[in-house]
Image (cartoon, rainbow, N blue to C red; front, side, top):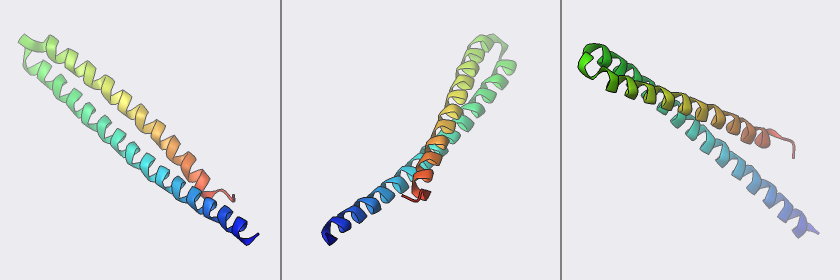
Length: 97
């Protein structure tokens, strides 16, 4: 009887560790998504500036700007998704079970 109880406690402790690992993982991925959004946004601004300074190749710079802006939006969406996943993992850690 004690062995069975001990196994359930080990499972519960392992589950808690897994959720902490998941929370850390999602936090890290959220930060990477934020970093990607900032980097892509900065590159988009750089290309916008280049388009104004270099009218001969403005079309090329405008295309690169739009692609970078799209990547920035995608990265921000990924960061938001990871934020929600992190909150979900944290909810499992703080749950009474």
